[in-house]
Amino acid sequence: MSSAGSHHLALLNERAIERQGDYESLLFEGAWHTSGGLFERGRRVAGGLREIGVQPGDRVVVLMMNTPEVFVTYQAVWRAGAVVTPVIFLQTQPELRHILEDSGATAAVVTPELLPLLLGSAEGLDLRILVVGDDAPPAGTTAYADLEAAEPLSVVPRDDDDLAALLYTGGTTGRSKGVMLTHRGLWASGAGIHSVSETMGTTRSLLPLPLSHAYGLIVAVGGMHSSRQLVSVMQRWFDAPGWLALVQEHRLESSPIVPSMLSMILAEPIDDYDLSSLVSFGSGGAPLPDSLRTEVTERLGAVILEGYGLTESSAVVSASTPDTIRPGSVGKPLPHAEVAILSPLGERLPAGEDGEVCVRGPGVMKGYWKSPEQTATTVVDGWLHTGDIGHLDDDGYLYIVDRLKDLIIRGGFNVYPRDVEDALMTHPAVISAAVVGRPDAEKGEEVVAVVAVDPSSGIDAAALIAYSQERLARHKYPREIILVDAVPLTSVGKTDRKAVRALVRG
Image (cartoon, rainbow, N blue to C red; front, top):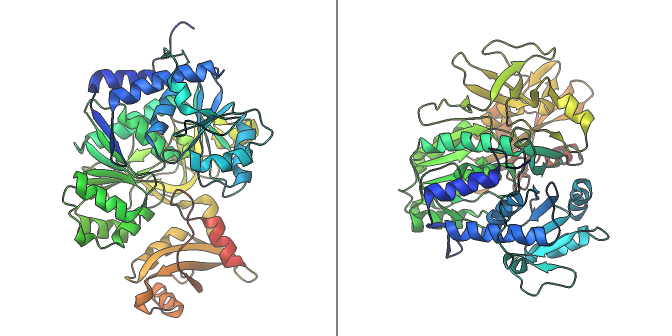
């Protein structure tokens, strides 16, 4: 092959530099980085990767907290024709060991504070370890700066349907699986994200999401589609007071976020900050309770553009725009994604009827890494079976009801945890709630809620059960509520239902 595919992500980055020019594009912990400087570093790191033997198609693990070098590394890996394998830094050693072995990674880029985790997980493996921010790293590892001393590398050709990223699912229901995403798929999903953000006209954003997650990765790719000079301020890791201070100091207009982050922000004394520059939030990664949407709109004066996607769909399927906001909806499918609601028999269901949300288009994963059987049951005739329950309305707006696997069947009746959670969240004392089923000899499953409340409220479990009983059908309301200091969350801010079930079932 003599030339790169037209959707090669390294070419997307090159074209972005041509359109946007060289300017101060990224602020991180008080230091500005220019778009041209980051681009040039990526070209050199790509050359360095080639010099240490990274070949086209090789997997390169990226185990880093948010730093500018994450952007540089992604671009360098794609430029070298290799495959980005992002790993969120809250992995345990056995989880990371599984990813390193399963992916067959040949190299890993790591920041110093995560080096002990990587070294412990990589023992006995043939892995080149590249340490960012340490010019004299331990024996057996290589300084990232050494890669930057290499000659710049031209874009290594890859086909559009070659792998660009191998992302491992969270593994909350078992061992994590590698999701194979292509250059074409990430390009198309990034274009979809860009088409939504473009409608707001904002150019100054705050990025608190971990770039090692599908959501953060696609936000980064989306920015490369813009012709405007976008400015990003990045947090190493989300913290609400820091987020508020950065919005005020830099007059930031937008922020991609997950709902749990919004709850943490609203728990702060927000009236102490000037947040008048805020225009919009992009919300994804988890369902957005209506009560939280209302509170954000009233207290922050910013619009929330809710979207939906999953790792297997290259992170995004649908999104709301300012003109297409319908409470409870995750917007209309974006141009690259076709959505159908299917019955258990594979039949298309009419508007308004709940079934499994299925997706077709270029963003659909190439498959699960080394798992053809699982791929065959998840992608059928080109349709990705998401495992989510939802429906389309008469106008084509998508509504997500719940996860198929989280469905509770109590006495023969379906109970969707999100319905119960949303009802509980309307109580002013409730901070967060998670609902799961517990095995029950009489009913099959019983509805149980784990709830965090404002400790100054004095509310008890019995009062919350009575409150929910007034708002939910008899088969839906929780018979037991367990009060906790905080509802367990995964590393990316989603409800950790595995941990909640363990809590409920003892």
